[in-house]
Image 1: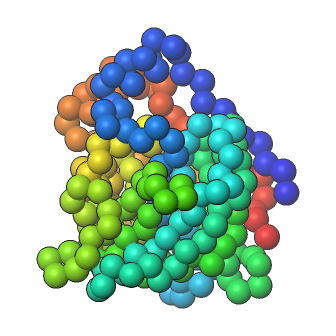
Image 2: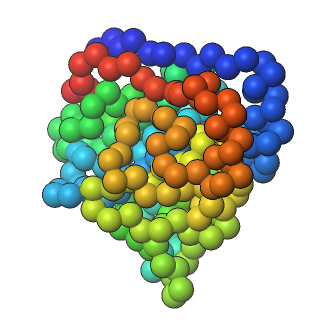
Image 3: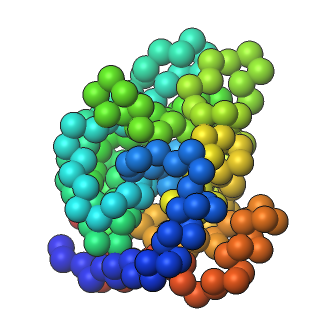
Length: 219
């Protein structure tokens, strides 16, 4: 089903400043921008992983892995296909079991029922790692994320990146819990910003809304 998408239009001067101030240590590619791995009821068909990257990026050859915090083993691996659309947001939704999903406007439907924490989700490019999100208490577990782990989100809540273009290499600093998940939409101020980052963004407010116009739902 076709959907209208709102492309990102930022002035070149803002992009340059954002690159200097916000993107210290950012990956040179696609990142995980949001993840819901524990639904309120059944996870089947309700969980999702959202990616953010350069529009037109071909995802073929990338994969998503679930890494078990108990022993560090990979318990789930799914190959990705598709192209990041004009809004920069690519939504991967869990398969309900018959090729459909309950997550609206999914770009790709796969079996991605990730475990609750402490576990990690890894975005891999062949043998290399583009991004990784570890969540939960890893005191006695194997951490496969970046820096320090993000908190373990309660059922029905997601983990969302403060700013989809900023990756400090530390999950604890980059992600926060969203009580109301936003699959397929990336409002930069959807989660509380660290003071310094919030001060910067407040000076150029209104320029950093990245969202998707929805028309219909995915089958």
